[in-house]
Image 1: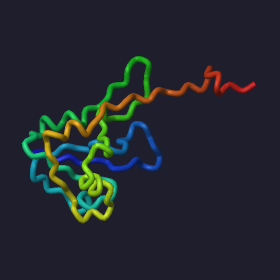
Image 2 (image 1 turned 90 degrees about the vertical axis):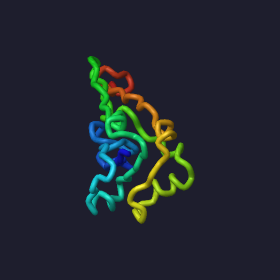
Image 3 (image 1 turned 135 degrees about the vertical axis):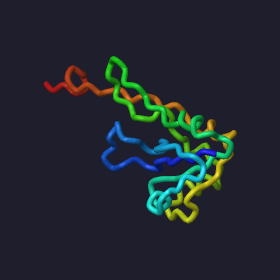
Image 4 (image 1 turned 135 degrees about the horizontal axis):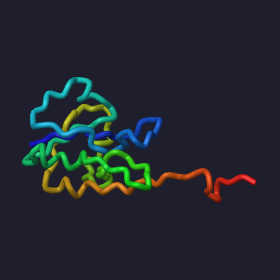
Length: 134
């Protein structure tokens, strides 16, 4: 089994190069000794996936590459879609009280809960007719 730590919400500064909401922070081996702070952090959720080796779990932390056009992209290629969670799992995911610090998920259904992130395009200020003055 592997264990994932997921960011629940964006940071206030919305820096596109930082991990964003619903992205996997890290993948750990089964039984990783998470600290009290990690288990209680209101912005993180720990997900346990039975039968998924850590190496397989690493696909959720793949980084996007910046291409030759210098598109601004968030770091993770995949993003969890919370609306695809079952009602009890969504309630756990949305609960900041952290009474249940980690949750076991069905690894067979886990892939269907993610989508590939669409890269954000840079907005060029100079030369953009919408931003030109005068």
